[in-house]
Length: 173
Image 1: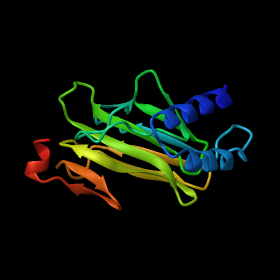
Image 2 (image 1 turned 60 degrees about the horizontal axis):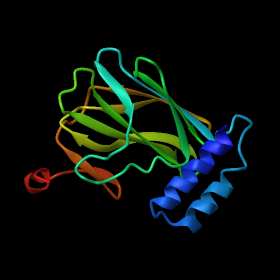
Image 3 (image 1 turned 135 degrees about the vertical axis):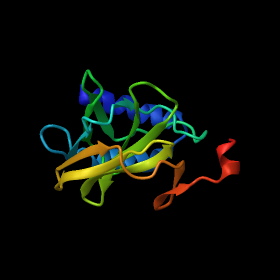
Image 4 (image 1 turned 90 degrees about the horizontal axis):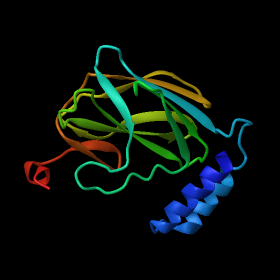
């Protein structure tokens, strides 16, 4: 059930040393939800011409560690070309890895979350792959995004407000 899954995620986050007080507040706030258990839903897919697939992100790029993936539940379709994300906590995040079907070592990490009160998807990390999440529709309850093979390809890493270019010395890490 969703409640059991949330409890396991909360315990998992606590075991990883995440601040329990902050998590408890967010977890408690997330209990005043719609009947389906989601504060908001995000539908995200790859454009047909990209040849990309989506995967649940376990590890971030560039040695940044484990992806938090707290406060949201992910469902991928069988072809891994579309995902539904149920955000059940106002501070929830779900990280998705975008990569070519023919794995070339190139990848992109997309962060899906609530930006204020509207769902948003943005490039969190990029490693030589163009992956622009384009907003198709966004309301307070539903965000629809399509990943296109457009935009920059240079490696970048999230830092406060944007995905910033990585220097050549950082790329050696």
